[in-house]
Amino acid sequence: NSARNVSGNFVQLSYLVAVSKSGSGTVTSDDGHINCGSTCSSTYLSGTFVQLTATPTPGWIFSGWQGCDFTIVPQNICALGLNHPANVTATFTQLSYVLTAAKVGSGTITSSDGKINCGKACTFNYLSGTTVTLTATPATGWALTSWSGCDSVSGSTCIATMNSTHNVTATFTQLSYLLTAA
Image (cartoon, rainbow, N blue to C red; front, side):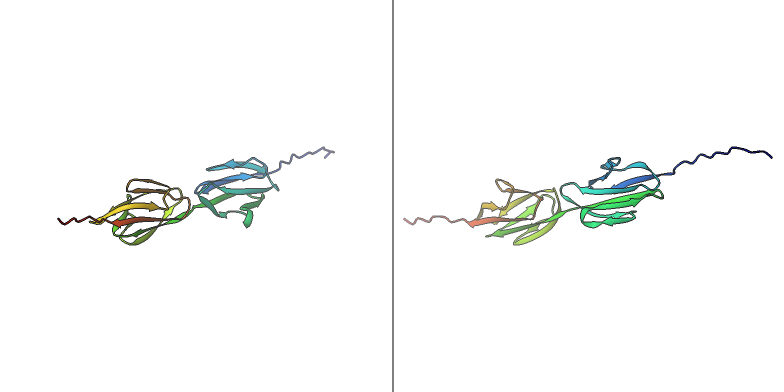
């Protein structure tokens, strides 16, 4: 029934951005509030535009985003216009490389993990960073004379660390004996 002064308090909404990842890599935001290797989050005011960048660790590649408003593919960027909470996942996939084992002469090549067991040539696809130990066993009357394509060699063993494709060869030489007739 009389004049009144009325006031209102308005509060800007804020939303949580939760980031998770699958595989090995990091996710960072353009404003520096998110910088994580596993799972992390930050709260942003409504209307904020945030860009997240996925960076794989060596031996891994970035495979994709889930939960973004849109993505910028070549740069591995997830863009969010915050008018709702966001749950975002970055997926990283481990690289793999082919190890091909071959031989010259007569003998066999086997790996300590049992994935390679061949008489002539064979291959197996190993995850990046795997260390493979191969052993060359000469056939009767033959000797191992050399390995090629190994990262290191110790006697009859060849070590290959799978950070790239490897082609290894074991060379066997047939033994010969001197026959002297009297």
